[in-house]
Image (cartoon, rainbow, N blue to C red):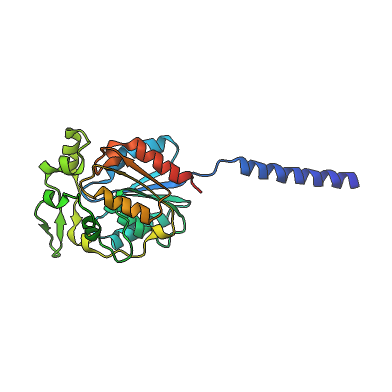
Length: 262
């Protein structure tokens, strides 16, 4: 009888050890990648990046950013993040950087922030203030007169025939023309909205931008990346504001670097 019990005990121990080993050998689930577009763009601006990430086994969500203001837009994106059962890498382009900075607050599943030609304001700062902090932006000269809204607000657009040079100079002209047609407006008041608590102070960040950006001065992005103590900063020579469209491989690889970092 003792031999029977000993054999049973040995079998149970072996089974537990085998199960534990199997669990340890299982690959860890890859983080969700949530991509947040900026002003004068839409979710399709991430198509090239998303294609690469999907091929590499990531679950990708390109959120439809309302472009109404960082606090409300951040709450919207944040609710999406909260619904995801697993770690998340939040990626923001341009104004979308301001949104992910808000959206990550209080979401413990956000493991990394990736800023793509983006804003990362500190508490109390505005996007207008950050843009004017360094020379180089010509955006104001490319904007159409603000469009009046029924509620008294005003929407901002880039003039279509100025879109290519201003926003996407390193993108083929035909593609830039389509981007100009499908651009989504930013509420003018969003430029003067004071930022809340910056998530980049507690969540690690990665940065990529072009040195030929005409929307956000490259010096401003270098300043914000240094202030955020970014884990890595990639500066793409000759790249425009839409570096994720013109250089999707570079952007995707940086996102994947953030996804696997500890």
